[in-house]
Length: 61
Length: 252
Image (tube, rainbow over all chains, first blue to last red; front, side):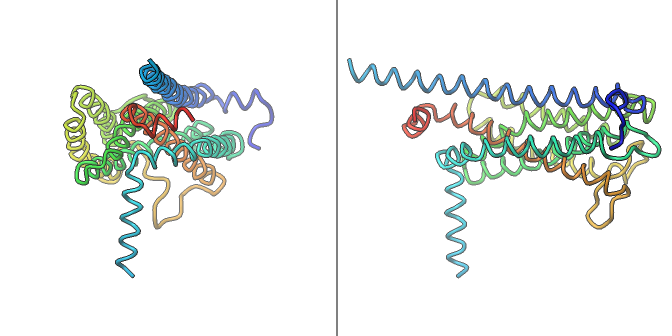
């Protein structure tokens, strides 16, 4: 273990700002990729469900 | 014997090219890829952040390497993958290859952006500047613009086949940038250090430093595999929305 306590860990030998900014930006960008993909997935699934319902209604009436 | 092997391979190839087959396999693998990429990344990054020894010159700022190098490596690998997928889509007219190529562009742009941003942040304490118009940095910025150009070109063309061809040509022309990025640190005087991992040499750092980097690289590639399958499956959901088999899969 390189650090003895949490304060040391966050301080990163004085370079905390640079290290945590890098990791933070990376985390946010990757999370955005996941969330955008997931939202698009939901929208597309809903669309297919709607098409299926319309077909169902059309064949019953 | 070779004949039957060839037949087997070409059958697999065509099976893989079918959206139905891909949809089923991607759906089965996605949860596993999500699980493994999270686990591997957490393991590699915690090791790199908290357990690896500090650099004798840079102190703890060198820990940015554990995201900077994997992101930069992916930015370039995704580009090659995308160019190959484009060529396949347009030589063999395999629709799935174009869906893969389309999914690659935004992901490649994001990983390249991560490499550029973390590089700039790392440059400040190490070189004393956020940005320098140096060969490695400039060629990497061009890679980012190539991705953006490919995304813009595709969204500007309504017809799918023409969009696939046009972006394919642009991707192929842009390939010339990759050897320039790779060898920029050897060809020109640059601030940027040379590659950490080389094929035939031992890394200059001790194993406690490069092992977590190797694990983080693996985690990032897993994450990309997950995202590209996820995005391509979305693409199938969009393009095949009216297919019977897809409706059956979704309503299952």
